Image (cartoon, rainbow, N blue to C red):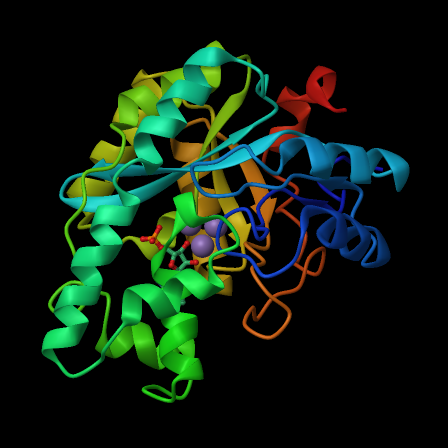
Amino acid sequence: MKSSYLNADLHCHSVVSDGTLTPEALAQRAKLNGVDLWSLTDHDELGGQQAARLAAQSALLPYLTGVEISVSFAGKTVHIVGLGFEAENVEIQAGLKATRGGREERAREMSRQLERVGIAQAFEGALQYAGNPDLISRTHFARYLVQSKVCKDTNEVFRRFLTPGNPGFVEHRWASLADAVTWITQAHGVAVIAHPGRYDFTPNEEFALFTEFKSHGGQAVEVVTGSHTPQEYVEYAGMAQEFDLAASRGSDFHSPSESRIDLGTLPWLPGTLTPVWELLEDRIL
Ligand code: AMP
Ligand code: MN
Ligand code: MN
Ligand code: MN
C-alpha cells in the first residue's frame, strides 16, 4: 500500500500543555481509533514525551517525538511542529524553556485586562485548568470563561476575548523562526509548518514564511489538519508541491468535548505528496 494511506496522526495535545487528556489516555485513544503512527506535540514543552512514548510502546503503536513551538513571525504567532528529534537534546530543551518562560507574566496581564471589563480573578480561574502551571495558555482562560458562564463555548471566547483587538489579548514575543527550525533540525528531527491556513497572512507574508522556513532547513508542512477546511487541503497540497516540502497529517486534538476532529479520523493525505513520515523512517520509536 502506498504510504500516503497510513493513518498517521502527528499533532495533538495533552494536559502537559492545553489538552484535557493525559499522554497515556491519548495513546489509548489513538490506538482505539486505528492510528498507525502517532506523535504528542504539546506546546513549547517536552514533559509528556516519555509517558507518551512508553504508553505507545505498550500499545504497540509506532511513535515519533513531537512538539509544537510558538514562533513570532511578521507580527503574528506561527506554530512550528517538530517531529522525530532527540528529546534529550539540550539545545532544544533550553530553547523551549526560554520560549515558555514569559507565559505567567503574560497571563497575569491578560487577567488585568479582563478585570477591566468586569471579569474578576481570571488568572486564578485559568490556573485551575492548567495541568502544567508553566504552560498557562489562552485555552485555559477560555475554559474558565466558559465554566464561569461569561461565554457559551470556547469559539465565543476567542471571538470576543483573547484575540487581537479584544480584551485579554497580550502581544507576546515567542521564539524566532530561525531558532525553532534550528533546534528541531540540529536534534535530528523534521520541522513542519503547522496549520498554515490559520494565520491570516497576506500572500506576500505567506510566501515569506515558506521561503524563510525552507532557508533555515524546514522540510514539511501540515496539509491535512483538523484546523483546515477541505479547500485548504487542496490549497496547501499545492504549496507543498510549489515549495518542495513533505506533507504532514494531524488532528490537533485537544479534548473530547472541544475538538471537532478526533484522533485518527482525518481524510488521507493526497497521494501526490511525499508524506513526512518517509523522511522519518529511522526516527520511529
Ligand atoms: P497560546 O499559546 O496561549 O497563545 O494559546 C494558543 C491556543 O489557543 C491554541 O493552541 C489553541 O489551542 C487555542 N486557540 C487559539 N485560537 C483559538 C480559536 N479561535 N478557537 C479555539 N481555540 C483557539
Ligand atoms: Mn492548543
Ligand atoms: Mn497550533
Ligand atoms: Mn496544536
